[in-house]
Length: 438
Ligand code: UGA
Image (spheres, rainbow, N blue to C red):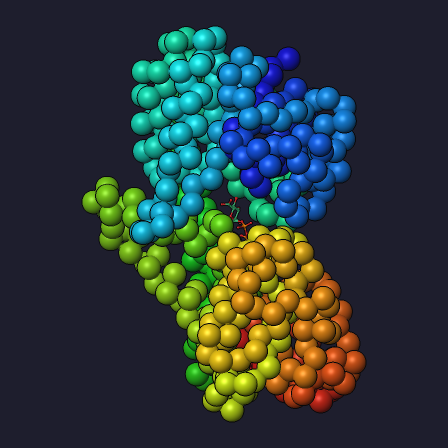
């Protein structure tokens, strides 16, 4: 049976390692971060992801998955090496920062002395795979016996295990039938279960991922643009979205108007796409993504504006409660979190901001120590002049508006995610305001 390694053990890599073990493979995970590796080695997931802790603990205990910081061990172990390192936005620009991808190849390739397949899963600008294949050919002692394939990942945080074991589709970019055979073998349990497979070349495989995230971001910004219009004419974007969604050509998913998208993927991926298109002399083709980004950022400004209005046009000395810090529910990820962006903007404008999130508080507090973190949703709302609901955790939907009304200074709530029931809140004496709703 093929032995697999996973290079980079963040959300993607840790999940991939555990899921490949679940498929029956022996897996060795590698990372340069020793703290992360020692947690994983003891069966602990260093971030919040439903289903993953049980899966990982089981396969670490069973010996099917192990973790190391020793790259020589990785090179000796693997028949297939999955590249799962991060590709964040560059600190001083829109392009993707590929330093971790290059570093992984530069360290691994010179150690590849036997036939193997390197499989890129990281989200990269189109053209990267071809460059990496050339570099591997230059560096690997095993020469032509080492090959590269590109196999983009489409998992969502919060559903990572499910998305890996039952993806909507598998995409593999290959240069030879040998590489295709190996990947078909690895994913045989998924393919047998009917998961569609698209076999293609490198640039297409890379682009599928970029295009998918660009499309999803565009869909969200489309409905948020409609929300802006709804706000002007007094229409209701929630009903508009529902009515649009019944058309199967449009579909209702990713059509939820609100505070917009954040996270470690959609925002940086649309920016990296623009940067890459510009390098390729094709900037015009994706110029619309600048607008998608701008619409998305305007939603954050809109929530700040609405909150300011509820505070009598001046935040100074006001108490603002923020429910939610993660970029979306069922995650403790705060990368480019719209909720925290809004909270910090309001704090800088002079308000006292008290925030609560079921899972993301440690990450939020490390990044924004200046905000005030409450132990519960109710504690965050004590004496609040306005409550902002910014990440739609189930826990917040279950709040009893009457009970919460007892402890706030003013019964005013802005629902940045349009998921609370306005009738319920209004019946309990609250001023309820959604985004793009009358
Ligand atoms: C996204 C993609 O959905 C995955 O397919 C992809 O694999 C992943 O990026 C990646 O590139 O690694 P993720 O970042 O986990 O996954 O989050 P999403 O579920 O896509 O949500 C992104 C943001 O959009 C969140 O802030 C969410 O609140 C927002 N959103 C989503 C909306 O504002 N409205 C919607 O209707 C849907």
